[in-house]
Amino acid sequence: MTRLIRQAMYRIRWKILPRIKWVSKFPTHIDIESTNACNLRCKMCCRDFMTEKIGYIEFNTVKAVLDSCIPYSVKFNWRGEPLLHKDIAYYIKYAKFRGVHEVSFNTNGLGLTQELAAQLIDAGLDWLIISVDGATKETYESIRTGGDFEKLFKKIVHTAFIFSEHDNAPKIRIQICKQKANQHEIERWRELFSPYADQLRVGKLHDPQGKRGYKSVIPQSCPQPWQRLTVDWKGNIYPCPSDYQGHKLLGNIYDTSIHSAWHSPRMQYIRYNLALYGRSSVALCRKCSSYC
Image (tube, rainbow, N blue to C red; front, side, top):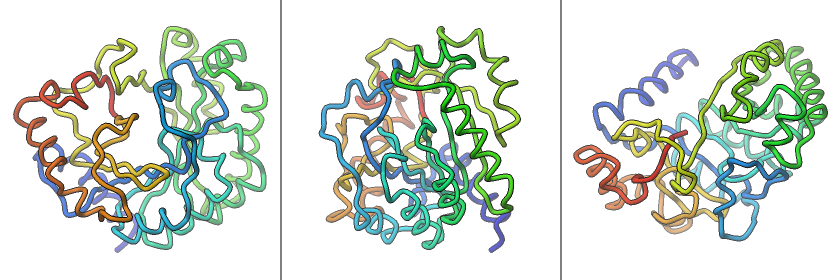
């Protein structure tokens, strides 16, 4: 099957299945948490409400997930910074070996190096997604506590240059989370980063637990239960990445297959109620203001 056909099928599954409320045999996408550790403390991040210990996923857990099914796409992050995991490139390479069509991860970019850029190319990464929440040092560092805007900008420039020399290099998406502190810089941000990105994206604030009072931007029936599952660094399986505190555990990959979790009574309950009664009928979804 050609890459273009697989890409078309991937987008059709992603967009159409939630609309017709069709449950596929396996999820289209799986979020695999490489680590829940982070080197920044961002003002809008839901890690503030995370109560569990810090850890790093082991290869056996990644293998168990990807040997259980082959999703169309995998993203190797959830509640932490994936570049803090020393084996991230190896995990990406295994996902591509298993036949995953699109592999990506979100990063704050501060861990990028020339050596790592080469490893990501070799591993077959499809998308490198870098979050930069400002166009100036003052704004960026006021939002991303612990960050260094000048250092990050140089790393982005160097990484983009290395990628440009290889036909099989990952594409770069640079994104910004629009909020009061940076909304006046959006156009300047576009001008600054467009030369180094294949795609720019302006996102909105996420508040999956409903604890910050952000206005909801999602429809009454969220598409995620028809699209994806999330696996944390311990192998625990959850309905979606908005379940930051792990309230709706579906099982663990060492005793529950992806297929079993995907078709479990809990997932069916969530889908049924979302489809018929909307988000207010599901405790996990009731206060959520966003989907990924």
